[in-house]
Length: 347
Image 1 (tube, rainbow, N blue to C red):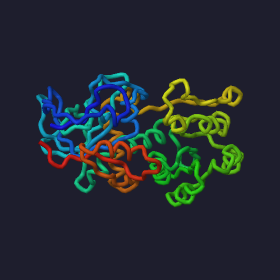
Image 2: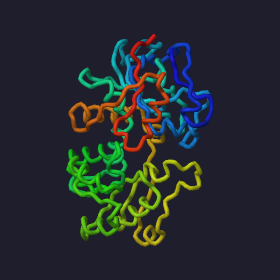
Image 3: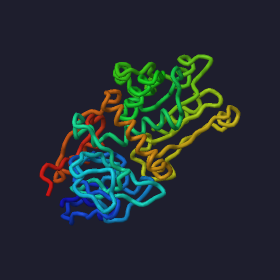
Image 4: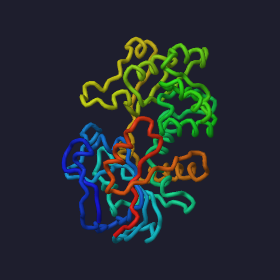
């Protein structure tokens, strides 16, 4: 089978190589999946650069998140699945926990609790992006912060994939959103998606606008994936007792020095207004949630997508041989579409 393999830490376009590898055999309570499509996430590339929350053992097959395919074979005692069934594989490594197989290859083995059957009406493009971003949005809004109908939810990077999903989910649940963007030309787009209020940091003061929008009651819940100065402002803008969950650091996207990945928080705001700032990382959630909790959350996400509550834009397909182009698109500014590795002739 073909596999896209990194021999060492480095820039993905430099260290990735297309290799031929044996098809793996499923062990007890495992399934062999024939991969049809798998996305290229920015986090996949940061793993290869050595600047993510875990480092695989090299040489390593790329892709550490999700894919869609068919069950090709079942190992002994692997119940609940059938050969030929179309499934999403959630390949997010649990932290702490064992590594799982990379998705940028034609076959992989996975535990049954990482496989979610997919209805025929869902395209391969949507299915292979089902787990990571929609699941993150669901967990942030309903589990991490438990935002209730009628409450305000403040979020940064509202135009990102997760940001758009949070807007859609919030509208479905009756939650009001205040959405932070950095470009004036993004404001109308976010409002068209259903964002209740939009703050543009290009020409607006975040703290002042939050106070004007939310009034005396203020905002008590926020999610942030920018970090840096903007993340600090979000914390400061919250009402006393408020909480912000940080799940990314887009402001330091190209930063390679770990010491520079910071949020300059106001100690007075934290202490005297008893605010909380904490992190969320999907990998660690997989390391602490039970298999039953994982499958329940994934089933909920599947229902939201198939019921058109959450929309996943179609990705742009690439064969493995064009990985240099695909990697470049994944990090191109405002690229708009998610690049996908698609396997047409699987052997």
